View 1: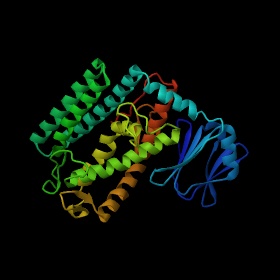
View 2: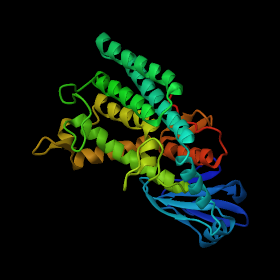
View 3: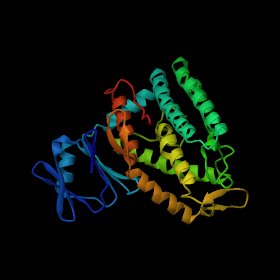
View 4: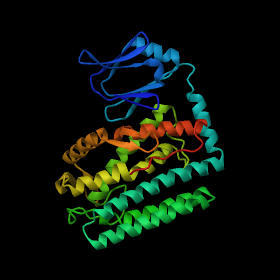
Length: 343
């Protein structure tokens, strides 16, 4: 059970939430494990097998307190909203921001700044752990390019310029990616980003992790009442979750790339966990997917200190915190959207 930004996140499987007078109580195996005054909470988010009493649901609906159900892996399932929910106002604010070029540009700059800074941090961490002076030089050079790109963002006046800066930095990042692989180099050689289909094991692993992260970002946005289809940095397309893609940009390097590198460098993922298909496609097989998902679930339970909240936050809840901060910005409660900065 974790309380962040007035929202209670319950991940303990088999737990039961009930209301006693005005106090929410969390029961695990028949014993009350925690209790919190209900008026302290603005919403509940529960993962997987977590039960809520009917009286607690009735009270949440009466008070306008949101309740969100996610699968144990974080996929959005359903949301309870009161008849007078503010979600419609939040979505109006989301659309109004998209219709304002200056606000859209400002938000896109913040998202790209978060992405570039986090990619730079991952590069510098890898440089300190590099297996050779040559690899260290390659990584520090890419990090320097990211630093220059960050400094140049405030001067960009058009959204396409921001997208171009993000694309150039991504090119430099992936050009240096192979230098971050320290072990199993013969089996995990990265020569460039390939998708639809991935052409090597590293790309197959990255694509699988990006897919899980995208689903988690979409669930987090649904949880706060935002439309995952209406984004600001990525161009709108039918069926494309552009806001989920926007949100995952700042989280891609620390939550997916760094995790993929750990799996490879520590030997937790092996060449036999992948299958090659006719035509050159490479994908994780059943054993590989199980290995990655198991390790990823453990990673989500670990904590990182959130730079804005100044407190440890489970890795799996970071997309939810950022979605809530984005909603606050769109409603006008925060002057600027604060991206998550990995340290």
